[in-house]
Image 1 (cartoon, rainbow, N blue to C red):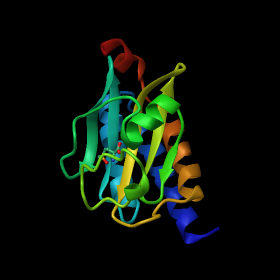
Image 2 (cartoon, rainbow, N blue to C red; image 1 turned 90 degrees about the vertical axis):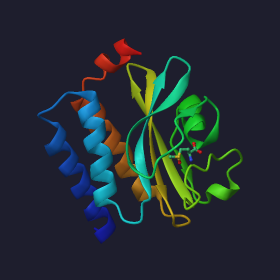
Image 3 (spheres, helix red, strand yellow; image 1 turned 45 degrees about the vertical axis):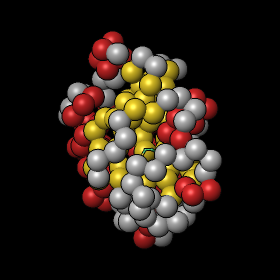
Length: 161
Ligand code: SME
């Protein structure tokens, strides 16, 4: 197994250990963004946008201040939301409609968080390096999101918004 794969596996083990005893969605999202930012190299932003009524709204994150509201279909996050699929963007400057919160960002991966058939949030991870994310990242970040969903009481969040 490559060093990179070992690190990703270790990150997911750390996530499970950290959030398993806790179901609170805000606490678990906050700690998840911290784990990503600590354990993945070359990131400048990692965090969540939460679907509230008709827009994605900034949630827990690590990195510089970011834009607060994103409409469905807009940017990489809004596209991941409306298409309900993982968006892996090797060069954000070539992605039509990319929303540049931090001009340092060069590549990005966004994963929808689906609970009970609804996209309740997206996980957005940015890097200042072009093509920072690959298929291995996609696989383990998908697993990361699955662990977060399994271990968290997102029904409380869904009832709230
Ligand atoms: N780049 C994202 C916006 C969010 S920031 O990167 C934190 C997008 O295009 O949706």
